[in-house]
Image 1 (spheres, rainbow, N blue to C red):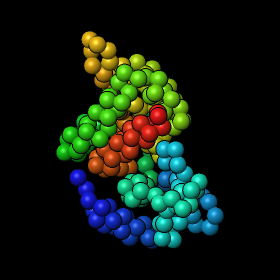
Image 2 (image 1 turned 60 degrees about the vertical axis):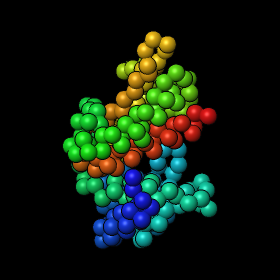
Image 3 (image 1 turned 90 degrees about the vertical axis):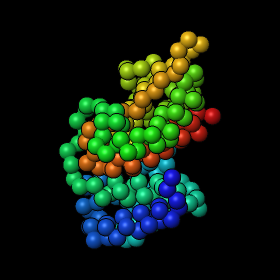
Image 4 (image 1 turned 180 degrees about the vertical axis):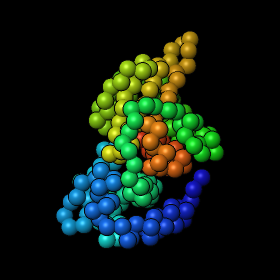
Length: 204
């Protein structure tokens, strides 16, 4: 498991890599919206962050006094580093099909799939309630499923098969294949876990 020092170092490396990129380029290729000056707005789950491109400081636009988790900062900064790429294809793949994912597959299951099944596997109404608070769009696969836009170019689908006394719950998280050009397999695993745990918090 990554230590806080690892995140601090990862954040600094990302900031250094982005330092010479014009704000206009960051906004164009990320899909984020410009705010005042060289800052831009980053919608992430149920929060909107204000990011200053002159130092990449983060603040919560609704609660400026609240510290933005460094794991989320690193994920946003890594997304900002992604080159301009074609938009989503409309196709879907499992995490295991993403290049490089095999090394992080067990972590993905532990961080995202297992908690999703444990909390929502017999409570689809809670799943629907949380998805609505994150602007999820209903989809047909599974007993209950929703599609989310985690970032402007990063759609994601969460699919739940409700369990009962005879069959255990099953769950899956699907990605557009274009994600491999935007985030690393490790970042994708962390992102999926962040979404699931935010869903859990919002379902209460």
